[in-house]
Image 1 (cartoon, helix red, strand yellow):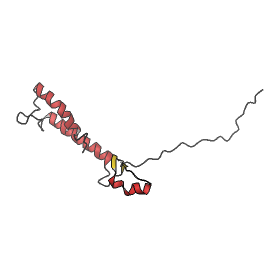
Image 2 (tube, helix red, strand yellow):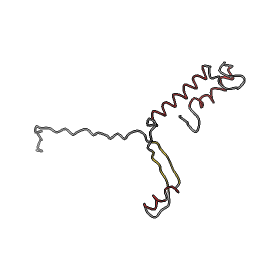
Image 3 (cartoon, one colour):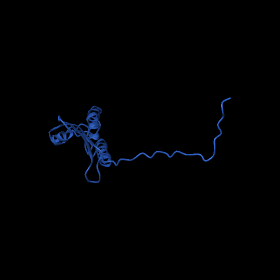
Image 4 (cartoon, helix red, strand yellow):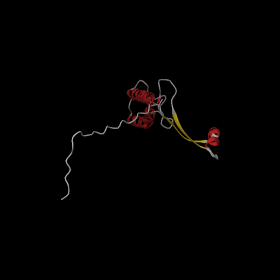
Length: 124
């Protein structure tokens, strides 16, 4: 489920588009709830965008239901590395970044060599 500050993409657009649709008198708005009708074109687009966002998130950040790898930065006060590792659960988390994609190593091109002599001009 894709959430940008707690809101799915379709819901974020609906927050802006619903008042516009209401002011234009479009049939997308349910008069009883004053929200988008799920069966309307506007409601279907909102649901499609939310589903699309969920699919993109699942593709990029989930590993087929398996565990994910995270890079976590934590700050602690310690005299040495061992003490820092012992205090890691007491530390303040600075960031958490999911890294489910495999690391791809960069392949450098091979340097070509010549098998024949290159003439060099001598200074006169």
